[in-house]
Structure formats: structure tokens, C-alpha cells
Length: 378
Image 1 (cartoon, rainbow, N blue to C red):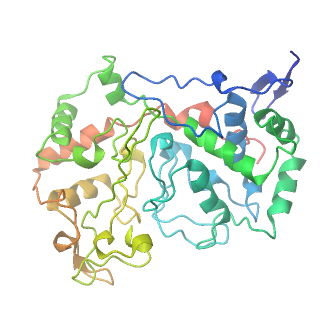
Image 2 (image 1 turned 180 degrees about the vertical axis):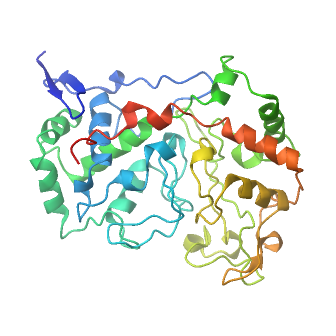
């Protein structure tokens, strides 16, 4: 078997067999016992070379129409693959309608985006920032698609990587394989090494405040676990052995702009696709892993700090005193029955905050496997 090697930007030496396809068996998840293996589409198996290719595409602005945006523009590693903005800026300066969700552990999501029940794979989700026009993010369209693919073909590293990652295809560098490679890289972004994870494995201890916060979180006083009780701290989870998958969406009482349950257009949650009044303001509960570094919060980035998020849940919803979104979310008729006023004490709030901070995976934020391979070139 003939082998070759490419020295990639930053000094990384990538070696693989050119003659044989890289099989899924060369990929190992390396998960702790409390985390099940994710489900992977049969038509896009994991491989080391495909993940490396996807990492390069993820960070490459040449994939955007203007050559000025990459996936990483809105999904930054040091922020657990979110950004610091309430709403992100697309390739033409338009703002997204919703806050950039984190990508860590997205391999286990049952649906993607904030309220899109039909988007059930990372491959399908990738089409939205690539091709979407409301707003334009990456700006790929029928008029510029060939030009963008030609840019990628002109990069010396890409043709051999595509040939090896997609050896079964006669013309392996195309937009479909671009999407598959990026999706494979996103699946590889695993975050299971927080202090809480190490605590579960007997490798670390939690402080007294963190333990009190954990009791609150998983107990019936704060009731956080009803929407965030899985190993991934959300309630839409699918893994390799899943049979029945719940896809739940929740109205948490953030808005009530008309006194009848209204949310601001175009951020009306599941209602935007279903048209059902009871779906007004219903959004997917995101994972709370790394929540310490993923602010601002909520589907529209309208809550700046984690302390304010805890306050809103303690109050059973949010009251907005003035402005166009003025209203008492606590009285929203479509609010989930799980969101009730619980009046946490100041100490309880601090304890809950301490526990949430124990979910930060510091290694994720600087792991070179997920970092920008073009850092010294672009």
C-alpha cells in the first residue's frame, strides 16, 4: 500500500494511504462511559481524512461568495463555537435573525437551528448558511457556485484530500462533498471533558456550591433537568441506539408583546413553520454545556448574562418594561407549564451559577484538533 504525506500549514504532518479509501473504522470517538456514541448517516461515515478536510473548509473564507466569511466567522472555538454577538453578520452585512448556536456535541442533536423540526441532519443544516438568502450568510448560489468550487480546486491541498475522503466518486470535489466534509468535522467537535464529566468519572471533585447547584438543577425546586437533563444537557438527543426520539420545543415566557402571547416577527419559534397558535414562541432547548462562554443568551441573544438568564427563570418569565417588545412574558398563555415562578434566593442563584460553570470544557476551547489550520496563511 503506497502512502504519502502532506505537511500542512502550521507544521502538522498528515499522512494517509492514497491507494485505499479511508474506512470509517479509522475513526474512534473516545467517549466516557456516560456518553453514548452518536448516530452517523450511512452515506457520510466518519474518517480522519474527511474530518481534516472538513476542518479546513470550516475555516476557509474562500467558500463564501465574497471570500470574506467562513463558518468560523460565527462559530469561534474559544467561545465553544458561538460568537459574542446577539445576532451574527452575514457576508453582505445582513444580520441573522437568531443567535449563533454552539456546535459542540451537535452530533447528538435531533433537530438543528432554533426551531426547525424538519432539519434533522448536519448535512441538511449546512445548506442553510451556505445557500440561504434571508439573510445571506455565505452567499453561495447558482451564479457563483462554479467560481467558488474553482477557488477550492486551485488550493493545492484540496484535490488530494477530496480524492482520499471521497474515493468512490469520479469527481470528488463538489458542493455535496464540501457539505459532507464540514458536517463530519462538526460531528467531531465533542465536548465531554468538563469538571462535571470528570466528577462523574471520579477524577475531580465539585465544590460545596457546585454540589448545591447540582442538587437544585436536577431536583424539583429549580426543575432545570426537565429540559436540560440529558448527558448533553438538552432534551432533543439522538444517538446510535436511539429508537424513539422526542423533538420538544418550549415557550419560556421571554415575550408577550401583544398581551396574547405574541413574539416579535420573525422570531416566533415553531409557529413560523406550523402556523399553530400554540407553537408561538416555542424553541429548541439548547445544550448547556459550555454555557459560561456562549453568551449572549436565548434564541435572539436578548439576554446578556447567565445571571440574568437565571433571574428570568426564577421569575417564571421575563418582563420588558418599555419599547416595542414591551410585555409580561410571565403571563404568556403559551408558556410551558414547566416555567413557573420559583423565587430562587440569592444563594440558590449563586449555587446554580457555580454548577453551570462546572460544565465548561476548557480543553475544547483550545484543542488543536478543532483549531484554524489556515491561521498563518489567511
